[in-house]
Length: 317
Image (cartoon, rainbow, N blue to C red):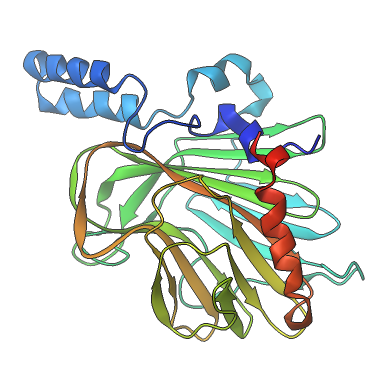
């Protein structure tokens, strides 16, 4: 059986959990209120961090082997179809290369000008904080050949003149599941406090190809588009990258922004609102996307197949 992203349950947010409703949240609220009464706000903040931005859920801790902890600052995966390098301090996708035609010629895909391929956060403005390092990284190889990388408790640090080095009251888990022809990535957002100005939060990919688009319009111009499509694609004459959405993996489908860079840059937003949204503290599923590769402009039909594989009945089990 082809086991999909749902099989990574110990590594990701438990399925079916309501957005913003961390497990046992009523108990957590009561505990925090008690801490505030007895030890003050500073200790309460530490308790909230431990409870909401925990890095090892109990099921994962119970079954993970000691070698699952990953201490290196850099991770690489390579198959016969693609290669990827991920920096862990700070967190971003450092390189992505692919050989979808199988001719042995790997092509570098990422653009290195403008904005990074990573998670994205804006509080009180657009893009105010960048990912720092995770509190913990875990790696596990399954018997069927899948490799799992879980980056837990990723902090976000201000980089603008007005907020340099400010650590946001938000962290994220970013989980990757690598297979031979594609990889899945799942994001979980963890708000450590109520936030009054959450303007944007999502993930981004900056690809060095001339065109980008989606299942609704194959060639997009620079603009914001509401909601999530079935898939997004970045492509040129002879190579392309696609990200297919797993339906139902998150209700937070605010929009996607097709950037104004010379490269094809797209941010997929769980939250996006000028002036910001008021969001309560807790854990929120950011969704799962499958990233695959195809042979460019004449092969865009392959993208629908990538979407189908992550949304079949077997994949959802």
